Structures are given as structure tokens and as C-alpha cells.
Image (cartoon, rainbow, N blue to C red; front, top):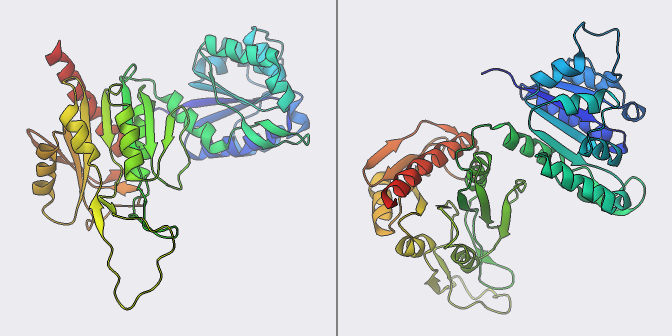
Length: 403
């Protein structure tokens, strides 16, 4: 695969030092990273830092006679697969919003015909100023993508919104923008992820080992392929992906209600959450004290989200479930597929190497009404794309049949 070129534009601001980590991370991922700095940015961090991290010369001045013979801002603009302004100051945002090209950074930015990502970082008052907000909206109107600033303690001493978005979030946005083929544009996808927690008393609850990694990978894959994604997530320790609507829940009932609220809106439902099958029949309002060697807990069944959605699904909706088994994988997963009226079941065996909870890889078998297909071991990120592509094929067939 051809190495992709990412241009990072670094504007003047204290957050400029954070861009060094971004440049380093992208270089380690195998991208050809080029950095262009404003003269003000060089007051906060030196070009040599970026040159050391990216192994490419940093551009600052528009007319640098010690550089290559070609017109650098044009050649780099043509090569760029993505242009990232991070940090983007109020001054730089105002310039790019109105087509002002008075230095190397803004000149190259204007000449580039690739996806563009803006990560604002500035004083809260500057960010909230109606002029800056208007400029950001204008950038969006021109097709640029803006990742929201974080809130917190700012270098100037103020507390509020204006901090550069976390580097992990900027990288997540870059992953989204670098996927050019987006066959799921216009498709609404709902993904459930993680475990649920069912209270026993104020101290204890029933749960499972789900990390949510598979569900989050599915949500990111759907987003990167162009879908409008809602991620309904139980309690996990994962970073929330950008450009995805997040609905945080805790119990199985919470998750049921969240899915039910969207039952008429989604085209594809992916039920990857490990929902507790049972809950306590009675939640004790006080901590249950020790009472001898044995303690009996009375349980009752939770609502079955997959079965309920399968019973009421429209002919143009696709529903995918997951099955975690320890024996008779295909037999049990097929029963689940038919019994819950799903279109696809992703089945994996807990005791199989490289599969199961918490890990970064998985080994699954895709169960559909016409048979099964076992996939090789792969990362959960890659598996997310594989599953979404299978669900897209099912959706296309269904829509064709409906039409």
C-alpha cells in the first residue's frame, strides 16, 4: 500500500508542543509526515524537534532558497492525503476561513485539495467570540472537519473550553478522514458495546469480563465507512471515539430502553454488548451482611434485546448479534440466529486462543441463514471492517428485495 502523506500545520500557541507527539505517533504508524510552522509557532517549539521526529525538513518561510527547486507549497499541497491544523489558533482559523494566504502554512493549506482537519486551541474568550465561532462554521461549510476543543485549566490561567483536543482523539479523527471509500454514507448504524451491571445491593453488582473493544471497533469501522453511528455503551475504560453519538448506560434495562428508542431509526443494529441475562429479583437497599457459609441470591431474567428487536424488525433493517460459547459453537450460534430472527451471528469460542474478552484480536465464525464462514485470526479493528462489509451486503440485498 502506498504510504500516505499527512501535513501538520502548527500555528502559534502554547499547545504547539503537543503537536510533536502527534507527529511522532503518525510517523511511527508509517505515514509520511510533513510539518509546516508559522513563525509564531517557532517561538514555542523549534523546527528541529519536528525534523528529528518526522525525518522531513520543516517549512516556515514561503521563500526558502535553501530548499528544493520546485515550488514547495504547491508540490506538498499536491502530495497531501490529509492536512491537519493542530493547534489551530484563532488567527490561522480566520485566515483559512477567508482564503488569506500570507505565509507558507496558509498558502499550502489553500492550495491543498485533500481532506482538512482543524483542531482549535486558544483562550476561552477567543474561542467563544462570535467571530471565531462564525469562522469555524464557515470552515465547516467549506468541507473542513473541526474537532472540538477540550475543557480544563488553560495556560493563561482561565478554566474553560479551549484546550487542544487529546492527541488520541485527533488521531482517531485522522483515521476517519483517511478512509476515502465510504459505502455506508446515509446509513444509520446502532452498535451496543461493553458489559452491563446489575445491582445486588449498594456495594455489589453482577457483571462480566467484556471490555467493549469489539463493539468500539465496530462503531469506528462503521463511522469510517461513512455511517451515522450511535454507540450504546456499558461501563468500559475505553476512550470514546470522535464523530459518534454516545449513549452511556449501565444496566440491561438501560440498554434495552436506549435501543428501543432508536428502533425506528437504524438501518443496521449490531448487538455486540455482553448483556447480563439475569438480574437480582430484589435489590437490597442496604449492604447484605454475611450470614453463614451459604448465601442464596434470587435472580430473574432480563429483557432479551436481540430477540425483541428481531421480532419487530422491518424488512429493510439488518440485525447482527454475537454469541460467546464454550462448546458446540456453530450449533448454539445457529439456534440463536434462528430463534432471535437475526440476519447474522458473530460467534466465537471463549477457550480458543486469540479469541474472547479483553484481547486485541479475535477469531470468529460468521453464522447466517445459508451457512457459516470461519475467519482467520485478526485484530478487532480489522474484524470490525469485515463484519460491517458483510452487513452492508445483507442490507443491499434487502433493499433490493424491498424495491
